[in-house]
Amino acid sequence: MIVPGLEIKQSIGMTREKNDKGDAKRIALYSYEKRDRLEPHVPSSESTVKLKRLFSLRERMVKQRAGYKMSLKEQSEILSKTENKLLLKVQKELIKYLTKEIDIIEKEIKTIVTEDEGLKNQYELIT
Image (tube, rainbow, N blue to C red; front, top):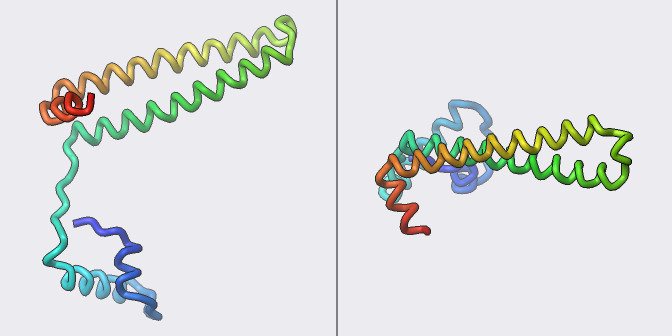
């Protein structure tokens, strides 16, 4: 079972004891009192963990790409093309690279979903 620490803290109220022994005692007491309502934690499948990591990476890369696109747009409006050719070129290459890597991540996500029957069924229900 996984219970947020804040929930345990709020259920017990204010206490003066601030040490590991006291915390362990409060967690044990909370678990004992709520034992009939607590569900055992079922770890996520390996596929689900991989998907979470890939989605997180994809999201970061999409944000980075958007930042470079905005920067490129602003700089291309302000600077003359001859002034900072290298600056604009490097940013365009970064955008191109990030787009390519995002596509690779999306293909890997699709592969994981199609290989896992449970995920495939959920995906088909959603779309």
